[in-house]
Amino acid sequence: MGVTPCLIKCLEKRSISKATDIQTKIIPHLAAGESVLFTSATGTGKTFAYLLPILSKLLETQEPENTDNFKGPFFVIIAPTLELCTQIKSELDFLTQEINIRSSLLIGSFNIDTQIEKLKKTRPNVVVGNPGRLLVLAKMGILKLSNVQFLVIDEADRLVSDELLDETSELCKIIWKYTGKAKTNLVFAACSATINKKNREKLLFNFYNKSKNHDDIKFIESDDQEILREKIEHWAIFTERRRKDQTLRSLLSALNTKKSKVKALIFTSRNDEALFALSRLQHHNVSAAGLFGKAGKKPISSADRKIALDSFRDGNVMALVSTDLAARGLHIQGITHVIALDVPADSEVYIHRSGRQLAPVKGAL
Image 1 (cartoon, one colour):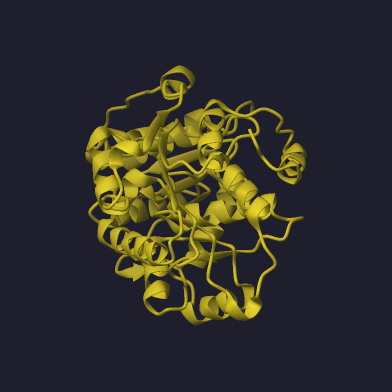
Image 2 (image 1 turned 90 degrees about the vertical axis):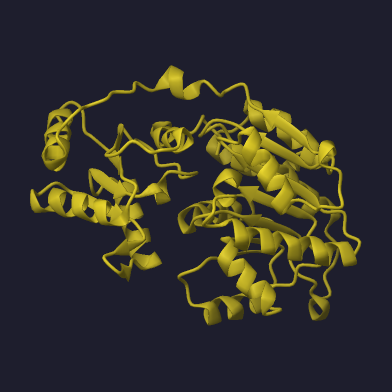
């Protein structure tokens, strides 16, 4: 499929020798410079589907750099959450550990002056970030965008939500404006486990170049869309609202036996509900951590969120209580149960939550 040999050699360290269905379908299009929208179930390899061809292209076309005339990154990846951006950056580091490609992570909740200093020093070929921080740096003129040749929108349906649409749309318009002036042939890719027709039209209208014909962009689906139905049992447990936290503790206790240890990801929609659920678990000596945006009116720092996520990944706590910060894109090995303390109004949110239980297809991310 045209993946550079040095990247294939790197993949062998994870015993990856065969592409997943979505990788087989997407890699040739991006390698050929064709814009795509694609959807595939969680854990089927969407991240590598865009990283491998674009990094291969970067290695193929890379020229000796004039460090005094750095024109900005070649490749921009936009994702909605700090946790997902960090995971994508980690995979970039894995793939580029032995090659001369530099990348930077630009996300909110981190000191912007420190990021500016690192950006100037690193002069990255690839940047990964959430739309708010990337937009601020672009408006400041610190993040130059005239050299961008690949733009990836990860978890695209989340980025067209009311909360994130304006920032992402403005950032994309700036990128198209600068690359248009530089006469750069920009390749666009957007992906998610759930992209419906309405979201597809919305993201093309807001994030794609309005001067281009939208009919030319390909929409590709994986054959793995039934993975949630085939590989996960779905239970409904009914309880009075006032007894919900007690029912949760009883469930965890019943599931966690000597023969079968529980690693449970617990979802609720609101910060205050997540904080309450976490406090009740900890009060009753259940080992749990929390991943949410605020405790009362006080924002949770990105460092504290990372500590909570890492403690759950490493098995130091049996439960992670989260808002939908953890519902998208994150791959955590060994999750035995996903517990939703509420039923989300949007069925696609339920799909993303449930998909956290699926370990990635071997060799896929």
